Length: 419
Image (cartoon, rainbow, N blue to C red):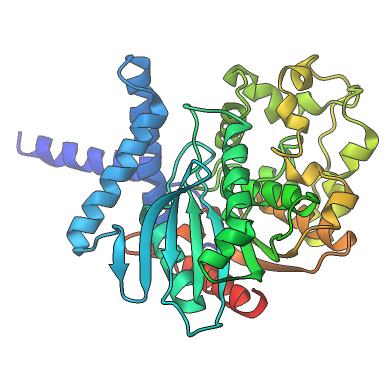
C-alpha cells in the first residue's frame, strides 16, 4: 500500500510533463519557459471553452478574467502597480479621443519652443484580448514616453465579441484623426513632423490599415511620419505560407488559433475554419480574386529564397463556393492591408517592421517589407532568428525572455533615430 502514493505521484508527474512538453525549434532559447507559458494559456483556453459549453460565460470573457487575474497576482507579488497619475518622468491619464478611450502618457514638458515626439499605439490580442493599460504594453509605452520624450496615446479600441470588423478599425481611425489634428498636437506640444503609429500583431494590422487611410486622405494636413509594425497580421487569403506551415504548432500563436481570430473578427461562421486551413476560400476560380490581387500576397515571388525554402504554394482550383461573398472582409484592405495597391503603399510613411523566425505571421511581415520597398518606401526590417510570436510582450518577470528584451530595445532604438 505504501507504493500506491508513490505510483500516483509518478504518474501525475509524467502526465503533467506530457501536457507541458511540446517539441520546439532548437534556436528558441529558454524553451521550457515558453512551454510553461503555453501550457498556462492552453489551460485557460480549455477552461474557458468548457465554461462557455456549460452556458456560464463567453469563452473570451473567461480568458480575459484569467489573464487579468494572473497580472493582478504578479503585481501584488512584486509590489508594483500600474495605475494612472504621476510616475517619475511620465504623467498618465485616461481620456477619450473623439469618443474612443485612450491612455495618455506625457513626458515632462520641455523648455519654451521645445516640441516633443508623438506616438499612437494599438495593442495586439487577436482583436479580442488585451489592453494597453495592463501588463507590458503599459510598461513599454511608459519607456517610450520617458526615454524618447514622447507623448504616447494607447488606444482602447472595442473588441470581439462585443463588436466585429470594421468597428475596431474605425475606433482606431477616429482616435488617429483626432490625435493628428493641429489643435491637439499643439495642445500637447507635439512636433507635427514627428508623429508615429505603432502596434503589435492585431494591433500591427490596425496600425498598417490606419496608416494607409491617413496617408491617402487629402483632407489630413498632418500625417504619420513613421509606422512601426511588430509582427503584424496582414492577410487572410493564404494560410499555407511557409511560415504558417513551418510554425503551425509553435506557441503562442498556432495556425488554427489565428484562423479562429480572423473568423471572429470578420463576424464569420467558425465552422469555415477547415476551409480556410486548406485555402479553399481563395481558390483560383473566384472572379472576385483577380490575378493582380493574388500577386499582392504571392509569397513565391515576394519572399526571400531563404524563407521560401522547399515549400510550394497551396493553390486550390475550385475550392468552396461563396466563402469570399459570405465573408467580404477577406478582401477588404482595411482588414488585410497587404492587399493594398502599390499606389497606396507608395504614400506610406517610413516603416519599421519586426518579424520573428518562429511565428506564423513572419511571412505576412516579410511580404509587406518587400511590397513597401518595391513601392519606394524606406523600410527597416528587424528579423529575430530566435524570435517567436508574442516575445515583444514578454519582458517582465516571470515571463521575461532575452529575445523579447532585445526586440523592445531594437524598437526603441529605431524610434530614437527615425522619429
